[in-house]
Image (tube, rainbow, N blue to C red; front, side, top):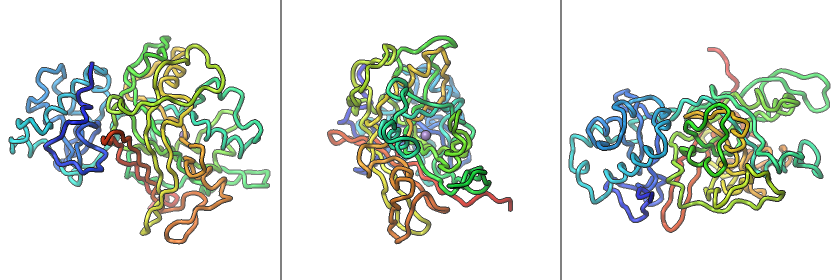
Length: 427
Ligand code: MN
């Protein structure tokens, strides 16, 4: 089935800035609160938010098998559960409705008043109710850097790393959309040289530059998803800042892995960009260093060329871009991650979220965490206001952005922007 919604020649009658992340070829999905305090599922073209619930009530999706209330919901879970055929039909229809050649809605002032919103009239919400959150560890550069710092430079990768897309089960209750601030966590740490732990604010709060994919209902208990079918069950991707408290992590992670160092917050960008929209940006992934077991072997291009960056903005000062990376660096791709996740029969549901793991490149300016960028704080970064950062300070805002670009078409994710507040205190 050709993806006509991706037609690079299509123009919209809605205004789109030249460098917008959201041309008519994108058509992401999200959930927002409107100026009338109504929650709805929507999309975005340029800087216009579009109420899909209202469009559906007005009959613009006639002919597509959708329940009446599919977009009048506070999460995308049911829509995502309808499957890829429905996502495609809806995305294609939206492309047609907003095509510069189509005057039906363009010339209907009344309908436009109901359906279209400026961005300052809406408030983005978490797009899905995330049932389960898994975080992988799939960047070989990141795993090597962390292994070098915390263990042994000569054996930086654990023996399993080149055979298994290593991951752990995270926590979904603290996943939040962009713009929701996060408090510096408190916890147990073992100060350098001490033999007994202390309790207090984490002193090493860090970001992790990640992407995450959102799944649909994929399999029944006991049923593995073959690697070649995995993409059928991936709805789309978001940017993910997987906040981490490195001092808490270091003390707690043996032997069962991350716990309180990770589950105080994970921030995501609010628009889910569909895998279909990313189709033109497929690239080959890194070559396997060691042979991989059959269930992890795939054909074709399963990696995506997505430019990523991280900026830190101290309060009242200009931001500084501290890292530029790319999703294509991932050693293990999403298909391999999903095949591995289900090879034992673990069921995956609509609205589950799978993080990539920190996305580091091979050069020091492409590392995806402060831990690596400052090498445990040994090489602080100078901000534009003259202050230095080893990790994230109170009232810093961390901003992650991502986009693809090819042949003049740019598909982006917008941003995930989060302020780190001081330790929580009851007023
Ligand atoms: Mn992570």
